[in-house]
Length: 189
Image 1 (cartoon, rainbow, N blue to C red):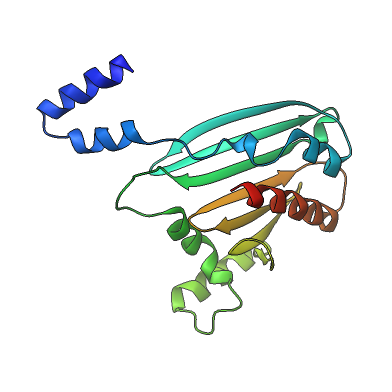
Image 2 (image 1 turned 90 degrees about the horizontal axis):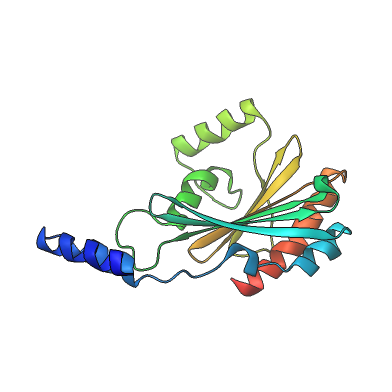
């Protein structure tokens, strides 16, 4: 704390205290591991969870809080990530803006799409299957298939979470299990 105060004071002399004050007064909203309990992971994956590892990183104006639930059967481990804007951050884009950039091209409920969105959707189809819209979760949700099954992305307000789980289940089962975990996380978000 003392170092932060010294840095803020030196920045104040150079006329840039505003940014420092915002970061210093910011409080972290959520820890990734607080969104889904170890017991909930064990119940869904049907294996014990040996350890949870929480981490946090900065992606520009975004804060990414992550939790890795290490299962006794490692292939059934679960990864959860929460992307939020740093509190009190002004300007620049928000997680919701990022979401729109990535997923609006695939929103089948849109009546009108601009040329860029249609091109983006076509390009994705050429690279692999497009994200699948999932209804009934958060404000918006998509499942993106990958060679391990897939990842569920859920937008709520101005934050989004992703849930990826391992194991030998087929893709449909992994999606259903991911939905169960997403509902738990959304209750706490």
